[in-house]
Length: 287
Image (tube, rainbow, N blue to C red):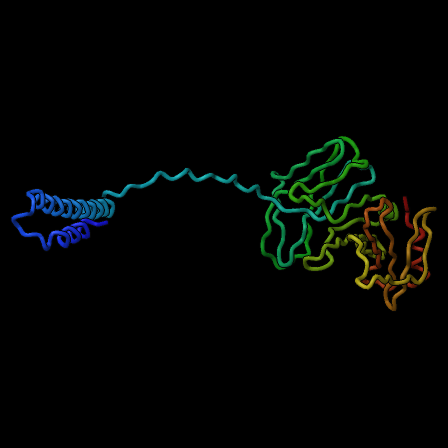
């Protein structure tokens, strides 16, 4: 019950009592009630004053209290580099050539000083330095060849900048030895802009020039495959499928180590008859 309610109740109780019969404590009770109201008002006023003063102290210019901020963590500087798309292993197994991944409208500016190879018992991790730059000819290939002390053998090749490895790896033993037939190898190119299919180019005096496409094989969306016109057995275990087009002939085969790499060989810019093409394919030095 508040002081006002106590005072009102008291006043009603003594309203019919003659003044001369009221005991002296009546006045004292009234004084105490007034004093308590005054004290309560003073305390409330003081509280308001303190809040206002505190707010002024906080908002006053030049007196801001700045909480200490944690030191910003510095992220390590990104190491420049690009992923690589595929790898080719020479016939001795001690030279690995890796090809930087292509991008549509981009070329790779290599940084050999940042290239790295780590050989372990079960895998070989290769990282390529460099960066992508805008360019008009995005068919050009950026490659780097690494020399090993020991042959690759069965070790897995891994891109150090990708947790998923690489789309294709193939040894030269999957290819005919075209150098033995007088062909020299030129600079490779990508089949198309941003297309992950590597075109190797070969030429010899008197021709014909050849294109050899290496790519990760994927079945057609409907699951069908094109039937060859006929097949040639170039070794006891290697079958080459031949496709006879109206103007071009092509030979097709797969990698021998279950890597899923598909190869297609075509004659470039020269018309070759079916019988001549078959004889040429049979005459290659196959491993």
